[in-house]
Length: 112
Length: 117
Image (cartoon, rainbow over all chains, first blue to last red; front, side, top):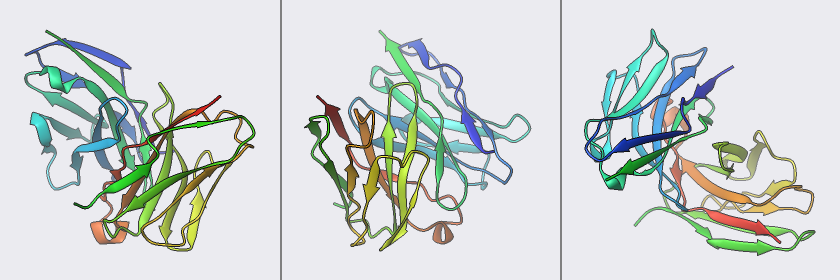
């Protein structure tokens, strides 16, 4: 079965610190992977997507993610956190037939 | 500007009443989706439609119904049979997977928060 696991429902960092949000996947076919961000009471916005063209993917707002097939991971990073990064982040896997499977989300808390 | 609109933003319903959530897109996307979001559970797929006049059940379709009479519109009805309807509902759309090589991201609306009183 295809699935996504996000380790840590909450991650706390200080402003200026490295952000690391973890995502592991399980897929029987080559995966297409996505990271979305959700601010309170809003819809989801695409941060970046892995399409097999490159293992290191750069997205919006300074975020990037690295696809590691050997580790079945697609962790999201940002070198320096900003207060505006506080939000919930979702990793998602394309299962084919246009359906996405989402992880349970990680809430990022940024303290001054 | 192209995008997805959902209305209303907040909706209150009495137990036993049906209620319909609106979703409209002007992105010319063929596929549309409805998700339910509960705290700590991520997004769960209710229904999806790949083309007009066709739709399929997702993982949690019981107590919900949809229609797809127009490409732009995909309304969701929460019926009285849904035991715990209080949640945040998100609508999304995408281009067909065949046109995007499989990596077709979904675009999301702003959501409707439904509360059953």
